[in-house]
Length: 180
Figure 1 (cartoon, rainbow, N blue to C red):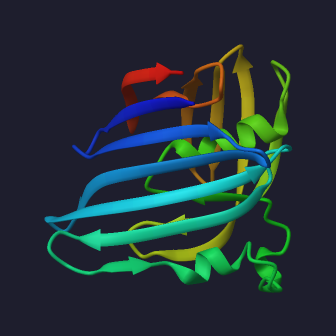
Figure 2 (cartoon, one colour; figure 1 turned 90 degrees about the horizontal axis):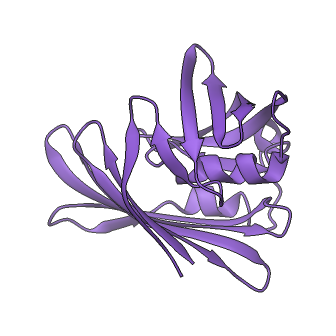
């Protein structure tokens, strides 16, 4: 089990845990953030198989003092139900409110230094909470450095030995980390 506490450039924070399971791996996290001045809590869990392909996604969003909203449409994409045609080729999920889901393609693609790959992911857009397919490129720059590109956005990502983000250029940085 590896735990990391991230600080966001917008003042938010997140506690993320990566656990090995008998079927693969599971990322769980709690994000504390805000939307239009309202405090928000987002809890998520993403399960992957031994190849790091997404098998299950759970996301719950709560406004401070308000009810929790489970995003069932997102979970349905990995429930065995037929996916919408535009999302059928998506192996990975990208939850835009956390750097945790960058771990999934980094581990699944297993790029060599100097290699890159373009993938299509099911992207959960924050704060709209819409799911849409997007193309992303991961390029491995060094032992633990990657360049991530989506549309006209580009950032360098530094990861630990598990592929968990330590520094996401301009957006997130790890402030504490433990491994058991």
